[in-house]
Image (cartoon, rainbow, N blue to C red; front, side, top):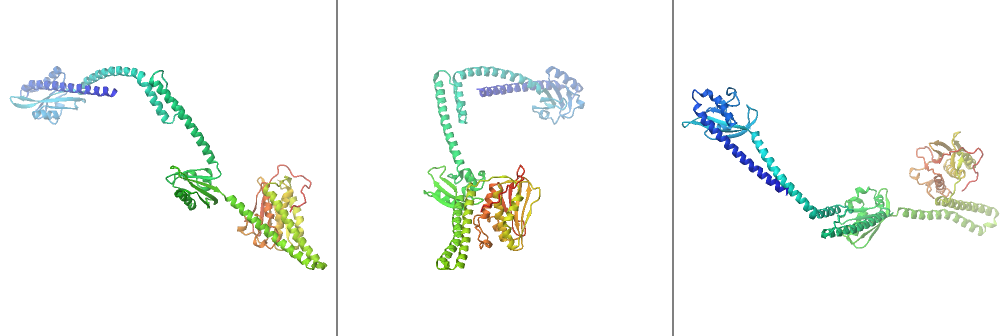
Amino acid sequence: MAGVFLLLGAYLVNYVQDLERQELRTRLESQAWLVALAAAPMIGTTEEPNLQEFAQDAAGQIDARVTIVDQEGRVLGDSEADPATMENHADRPEVAAALSGQIGESSRPSDTLDRTLIYLAVPIVRDGEQLGAARVALPSDQFAGWLRNIVVAVVAALGIAALAIAALSAILAGVITRPLSELIQTARRIAQGDLAARAPEHAGGEIAELSHAFNEMTTTLQANIDAIEAERARLSAIVEHLTDGILIVDDQGQLALLNNAAERLLGTPRDRLLNRPYALAVRDHDLAEVIAQAHSGDEPVRRLFEIGQPRRYVEAVAYSIPHRATPVVVILRDVTELRRTDMIRRDFVANVSHELRTPIASLKALVETLLDGALEDEEVAHEFLARMETEVDGLARLVQDLLELSRAESGRLTLSPVAADIRRVAEQVIARLRTQAEPKKLDIRIEIPDGLPPGRFDPERIEQVLVNLVHNAVKFTPPGGIITVGAAAEDDHLVVWVADTGPGVAPEDRDRIFERFYKTDRSRADAGTGLGLSIARHLVELHGGRIWVDGTARPGTTIKFTLPLALEPAPTGDSTPSAHRA
């Protein structure tokens, strides 16, 4: 409706403008002809000097500017300026048209008056001879003022009509269209996700029933969506916290979903995997082949391979499901620990069998020899029985070490940590093992400074650790070598070390010598069980420390481990037990 009024108002204003413009031109033309008729007798006569006065008088009578020019364009008279100061007007468009015998008109700023004027010029003719041109002019703002008054009047009339129609429309809208508009707005809000929006329920009528039904539909829709969202949140939480990795590939061959476990196994951030082709995202030939086979077949595809960085063993199972949006689901199960446990179990059985085979074979051979008659020879029988005792002691040590290691690994080994002096423990260990070092003339030294803060540890267990370390050093250090037991305080812990001048440990063996039954080539001939360093590692870790081979120490081997510092001073008496556990 407002557009119609605007078009109507514009049409009326244009129409009135055309009428005024035509009336103004007719007025100017008639005035110009009157001026030309009156000025014709004065041009080219002795009265020519009175043209300036004539122009001023004529301008006062017609209320317009009057200008008289001769045939060459020279100004003979002007009601607003001195002709002597005015330039030639032959180049003015309206004057040029009038000098050529036509009626000329134009609108432009006046150089003389510094105002925009509407000009109209007609030729001055006397006795059939053209003598010049008469020009009249009116300010354009005067015409604009007339138009302004007309426009104001038209706009006022249209405004009154528009207000009346608007008032009538408002009344009609309040009665008929407002409920429908409110219902439409409510529907748009719901479409944008605002399920709490409700349409006003007006009293009575079909629109009220429609609003009520619409609100019931919205309530039901919100309840259904809430239930779907709750179920979706539960499923999402379950999928995200599964220990198995989940991958879903959509019908475009892109990764549409993966959970935290899959992200960890693939070793790539989720934002770099989602919505990308699975072959480019997973970057693993085996996994991409599993997905491709599942996509092209109906049977589940199962495969075991390594994936990710660091490499992990996974069992991948891919299913093709009858759903257009998500045709392939892949389950990735990390079996690295299972494989490692299985390998440890097999290695353990093999190592125990290896360790038991030699002493059992020796015992069997000794017993058979004794039964075959050697028992009658007292000297030989005594020697064989001594060798049998040695083998039985070795078996006992092996069983004891296995029991100790089993308790340490299963967490059933209890500690009794106290504030203890590591120097006192070291002295007792050296005193016990000095008899083993004397045949090889080994020099065992202690480099533990006086006043070293006490550590908090179980003295009996740490003595067991040092016994294993010093015993290994005695075995592998050549005659005349040096073994050093040292300790120092660093930050909030003690660092204890055992160093020797033996052949050292190869770099590839440094991380493995703490494994069960692991022996370097040079120690295979030794009668040890290969469990001492493994037990030492578990005992140190139970104290919250760590044990390692110092690769920077030269020559020989240096094994270091850490222990926590004690907050209270160590007891003055000898609280360190002297009994050693195998």
